[in-house]
Image (tube, rainbow, N blue to C red; front, side):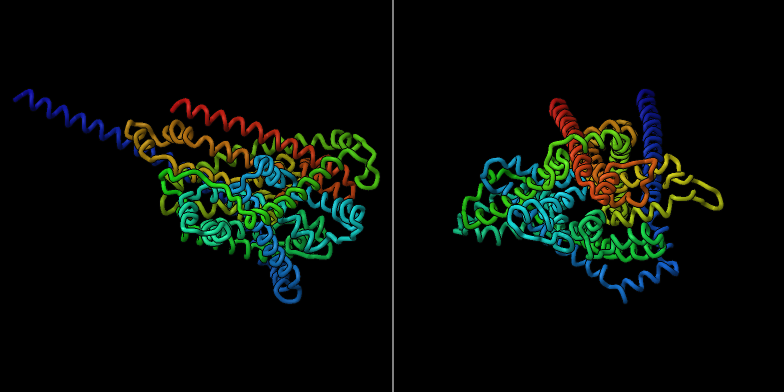
Length: 578
């Protein structure tokens, strides 16, 4: 009896000790989660909240409201032009993206890997590199149009902008649509074929309905990118006025910041509206393309009625890409491409002599911003997918604002918010971060913009990766006494390492090639390569611009190769451990 009582009391004592440990673990977990949430909320406020609030304040001033009134009454042209440009870019880019994705997934042509990388080329180059090459190859005195074909084609205006912007943003549609096509269940096509359906019927009644979500998502993304782009309208716009260029000229030309802020609000409304529609529609409609059972291999489409037109379109598109990027490569090695084709190293010597500082500055700021953006994206995704099911929707929405807010609007907001010290309750809490006399001569604000623009892609890829990780793995770690911090660091992060590497890779690519979002906060002390390229294009020194573009594309390719090697190492290490 005494032994039974002793055993019972021992169990009760042990239970109390275990209960205490569990309670302490929960307390530690809760504290860590709330600390992470506080850090994320602070980051969102600094990256999105404060710039947008300052922009709204300036836009709702008397001069800002006057600019808004003009935009909707007496001067409707920029707004209608922006909407028209966005729709045309979205239609053309989504169509070409579908064609390239279909050829990549369903055709049996050789060289599909090369085709893939050529399709992605515009993504890793400065936004106006294609525009500059387009003027040289297809302009009024273009090498192909005038000198070869004898045609005087006016590349400036709407037609040139649609071609260049569609080429620039088609890779986004291509990757989106291709991903959904690759996940389609092959049994769907086998069943349609067994029932006697032609390849043309399958294309319109099976393939297109299944990729409709990707088509709509691509259309909305390209619409936002089209209306928000600034660099290409500055180079190719001519007399075609759009809101983004009007904002730029209001600041750079007349110095009317309030009017620029008012126009920025006009541009912000359709961009955010389209973004909300996309998020709502994506959350309401899904298409199941993976059944979880092996159902055969993907078949190749050989019917010429289907493949011949698509291959012709894809071939023309690839030839245009090769021509334009060939012009960029050759243009940096000639005096004046198409006028004086004498080989020279003068342009690269110019870049080495006067552009080395911009190259180094761009590299170090990018290498700082990309990991910070990836870490922030991982923390947001972790909170969304693991900690706050209801609040997570709000966090997911505000975290994605970096892609929803047009770059011109975000850059102007940063200039307004951080050109002077930030005050709270009568006390300065941050020094000036933007402008030549700020901390870091403006580098801090530029890095912050890089981070804000890179977070959304990393956030989405990490959420997708976390959805593939069984929660029981993390629950097992916590049941063994590990806190949330240790579980995140030792269990979750290693499992989603490929998504983190992908986020860093995208952050580097996006940061090194952006100009629209930083055009208002670049300084003479902090030179950025994209800004230097734009200066050379404005001055008509296309040879220098081509040399800059070639160097920048080369740097991005080197970074992507290194990041891809790191991704393969991580994947191989995970397979070895499993």
